[in-house]
Image 1 (cartoon, rainbow, N blue to C red):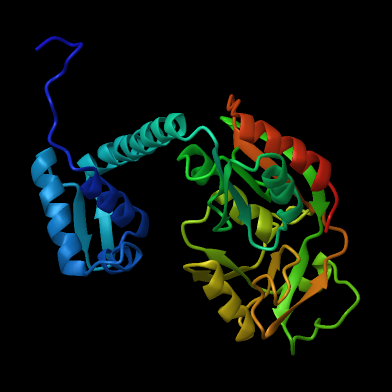
Image 2: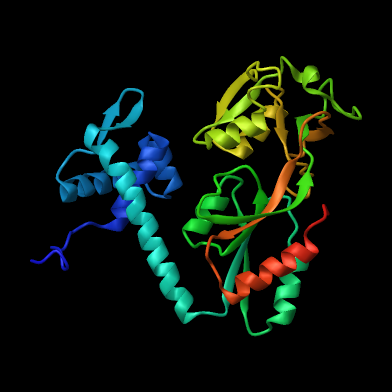
Length: 300
């Protein structure tokens, strides 16, 4: 068969996705929970994929699951396949639905004014909004799950167009009975020895930014427990085992009811931005950018 029409490959993308989730969690049990399936079913799916590929991709150990040598090679290719498939579907659907846009946003950020303006001026358009996980903004854009996102830096911005809307202070998150709760403000010296948790599978850039690691004087941030998700971190702080640095959430926008925040003095604010895919000239994306820059450029 010619190179223009290569031989067909029998590769089930659903199985490829299962493999990438197991590789991410390095544990069949946690991966099964993330995929809303059972561990035996997930094991069968991974075996089917290994039969299709023709090599062993994962090794089980007493401490969890790790990639085989072949799995290490296959993982970035698998991730690329899933991204390409998602983009192909999204671009195809966009042609069929040119008057549709999905706008993502991070917890605690208000986009109502810009969304309402977009709907008012484009009454025939389908305008959807989607709350994104704190670390999902870039992925959601590049996978075409959203067309624009209002979120917080930092994250890698290659392949994206990013506009800063406004600065947002960073705050200290503590239990209500913590020694620093209720203070007008605190400094990094006040928390020099307070453990700050790590979030598993967090982007290193995000992890370092929100832990302020290293500190301005070059010292590493005190190590805290390893947690699986943001909600786990809040439970850990509420139990008095750590403190955290974060955006100024309140109880209406996702702060745990047993926690409170204290202004953090002497720390540069985070930046709230509008991000879209670079080169996306969609009429609705362009219109939303205009409204966001006009209506969302001041802290709420």
